[in-house]
Image 1 (cartoon, rainbow, N blue to C red):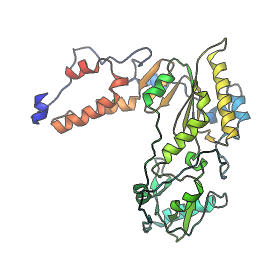
Image 2: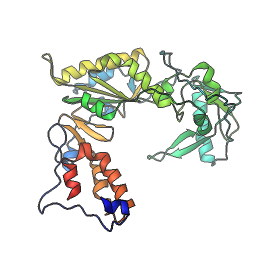
Image 3: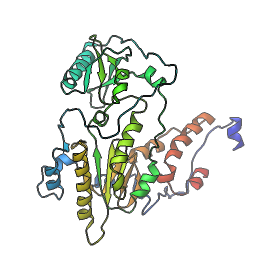
Image 4: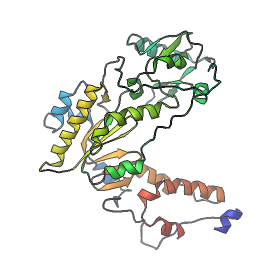
Length: 356
């Protein structure tokens, strides 16, 4: 590899014997047809909204019973105190975190005004007299709609980082290994389902172009420690269900297999019942349009996880395959960085393949 250190790379080409193909991890690790579109099209992913249109579906009765927990229009109300609140601890010597609001196009101003007009009656936000202030703006979503964003840059820079541990993706995958039925629940406005510590509410003050100053009673998005706080909440709530529930921020994954005389579906229905009862008791809501129930395979943190194990997302693999041939040391490092991110779960005998 001396030529890399010297920066003398002219061209790198990955070769393999004629007629051979890249071998992918098989059985419990990888599906050998990861690049084939027809394998992808056969994945059974059942969205909650589709299940409610089919009374014969085994999950229909459960979703009807818990329509207050899993729905497309959850109530906009102040959440209960579940023992975990978001706290903002500022570094010693911090005084005020202020950033002036800048002008925005009328379309964004209307979106922002409508948002706060809807949240104010529910008690999620209130008018503020705080000495702190962070600006508000909008960014486009992939579907063309606007997403409101607060620029908490100065506040985040002055915030002491949280040390809450975050679950490792590979550990979560190992915990779900060997299961044959999966569900994935996506929280609705997950951060808004968690209260702020009362003394920290003034720190969340945000300005809007129309001249109002609002502050949040629930945890707003874009706060630096918000992911850690939400992760701590769901970990605490579902701790007793770790054998069949994995949590990753605002995503809840339920996994089951046949056991104790029950089929995998029967076991999965029992596990889902426990999860939904816990969510109802703690007034957590999930978006039925984004939730998947009883699937043989689910999209899991950048890959696909199913009864046959873990396999790469075809779109991610195509991005590697279509990467331009490196012609410099810098280009090669970029390609290796992209490929190495996927190597553990995507390609068998990666070192041998890379050396060819």
